[in-house]
Each structure stands twice: as structure tokens, then as C-alpha cells.
Amino acid sequence: MNEEIVISVINLRKKFGNFWALKDVNFTVKKGEVFGLIGPNGAGKTTTLRVVAGIIKSYEGIVKVFGLDPVKAKNNGYISYMPEDAFPYEKLTGIENLQFFAELYSRGDKRKTQEFVELGIKIANLGDKIYQPTSTYSRGMKRRLIIARTLMVMPKLAILDEPTSALDVDSAVRVRNTIVEMSKKYGITIILSSHNMLEVQYMCDNIAMINDGKTIISGSPNDIIEKLKVKNLEEAFMKVISNA
Ligand SMILES: Nc1ncnc2c1ncn2[C@@H]1O[C@H](COP(=O)(O)OP(=O)(O)OP(=O)(O)O)[C@@H](O)[C@H]1O
Image 1 (cartoon, rainbow, N blue to C red):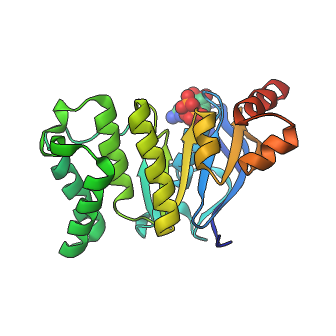
Image 2 (cartoon, rainbow, N blue to C red; image 1 turned 180 degrees about the vertical axis):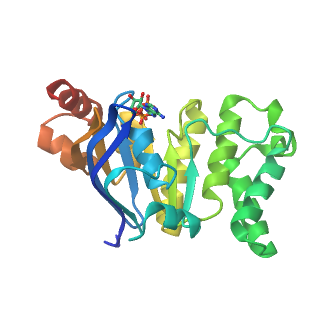
């Protein structure tokens, strides 16, 4: 694996009003890896991802994406971000949704637009439903379309906030495989958040556990499991959270 650092987060702090949502978040993400942020509800995962995505612009600490301010990286088109609550345009069909995003990212290059849409159709794997308005989709189908939309544009960095929430087992397995494939085959760096420890253990090269706005531990799932002398990441998580 290439050792180039894609994301570096140092002493990240973020205050909403009088409340410190992030108190001290630290981690680095290397090129081409799948990196997982895990932690209980309200730990600060979404806030961290929003800073890295260049959406939250005021914070304390140092955050660099490809050596740049995250806003600059976003404006350069390096980042494709899927928010936790993203949904497709309901008046458009699935394929029209893909087309719309493909055009945005290909900046007028028609061949590229076509390539993105073809890849999006493959990733979404919705069969003939891709030609139906997305208002007729189930929650899981909408999710698959949004994930396809995020990954099909071959970003340098994909940020996925809880990509497999709302998915049934079959869809979740497909999405996990797609995430790993996109990273290994195309070298896309992916950072995601999840509540599912076993999927994180399966998908992620490295992880950071966040609790109460602070990074508690980071490293590869296997290193963390060995270090904490537990059987799996779920046990590691419970141990770390109960000691925090
Ligand atoms: N815009 C905001 N204004 C005020 N407080 C906020 C705002 N956004 C997040 N918070 C608070 O910051 C803390 C961290 O929230 P965040 O959404 O980052 O957590 P999370 O780890 O993603 O949680 P979950 O797993 O439930 O999605 C929470 O206490 C939340 O209530």
C-alpha cells in the first residue's frame, strides 16, 4: 500500500454554541485505504466527517486533505461526500439522478459522463427499477442509488456517513464488497462511519474509535484486537467505551 497521507487530523476541536462536540480528534488516512470511524451515538463521527468534507469550515486544530484545506480539496473536485441523510431527487428516475451527478463531476466531458453513469448503474444494481422515479424506491434502494452516485465519479476521496444503515443483509453485503473493490481496484481512498463493528472489521484497513469527541484508540482492527486481548472489534469497542 502507498504510504501517501490523504487525510491528517490533528487535535481537532469543534464547538456548537457552548457545547464541545469534538474535544480532541486525531487520525491519519493513507492513500487507497478504507478507514473507519466508529463510536457510540453522539460521539462526533458525523461532525468529524463534515469537517473533512469541507462542509464545516470553522473549527480548531489542523485538518488537511491531500495537503490542502478541506474546502480547497472539495472545490478542486477531489471529494465525493455521502451525508448520513442523503436522498435522491424524487421526481427523477434512478438513471436521471445518476446522469445529473455524472454531469456535475465530469465538467462537460460527455464520454466521462457516460462512463460514470454506466459504473453507477453497475454499483446501484437496481435492475429495471433504475428507470423508475425514485419516489417508488424503498429506503434501501434509495441508499444504494446514493452510494452509487457517490462512488461512480471515481473521486480521490469518498466520504461515506453510515453507508450500510437501512440496508438489508443482501444489499449491505453488496455495498461492503463495492466499497472494498472501489478502493482496491481503483485506489480510491474511503473514509466511512459505522455502528456495525463486524463490517468495519471486514472492510477497514485502519480505524479510529471516537468517544465523547475524543479519539480513544486507532490502528488496524487486528492490531487493536491483539492489543486489547479481545476476540473481535465489538469486544474491543465495549472494553474501550467502558474504560473511557
Ligand atoms: N449543528 C449542531 N448543533 C449543535 N449540536 C450539534 C450539531 N451537530 C452535532 N451536534 C452535537 O454534537 C455531538 C456529536 O454529533 P455527531 O452527529 O457528530 O455524532 P455521531 O457520532 O455522528 O452520532 P450518531 O452515531 O448518532 O450519528 C452530538 O452531541 C450532537 O448533538
